[in-house]
Image 1 (tube, rainbow, N blue to C red):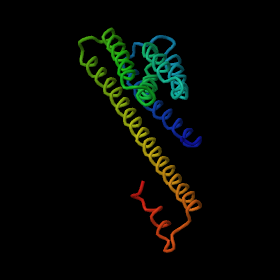
Image 2: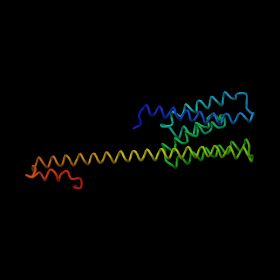
Image 3: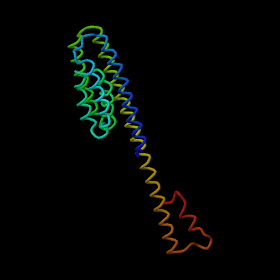
Image 4: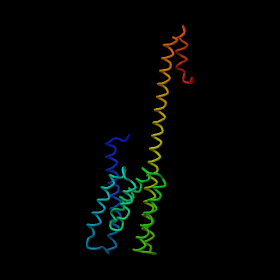
Length: 197
């Protein structure tokens, strides 16, 4: 089970990563120069809120991802948090759900980039970077999910082995009380042999 301190450290690390990725996209957007009067306050404000919203990724991963995906129309700095949220869907939900959320984001990103720079070199470069980031986020999420499932399976096997050992020990003590050990102590030895049922 995840400790509270470990969870907080994970939260802080992912928020920091989302902020760094968002900063990269924000810095890249500065080169276009065609921003409205609310820029950069709206962009950075939405990005900061998106990073903070990552604290909800464990409880509502799908809802969070679907909420953050449309922010790409208003904020480039939120794109890092959106990628982390999509990765969280892969961790906490099925592969099918993660693929559907990833598809929704891919369609919206493609539509936005097409409106801004269809057919240009910037269009293809930007689309490739964002979709590659999404793919990496989902791949990491699936890896974390599989690792957690493996750990849970090993813990369950260990628990079952301990329970089996406890039951065998109880059966051996019960049989010893009823029949008593043989004079040469063979009963006690045979009761503890691991290959006996």
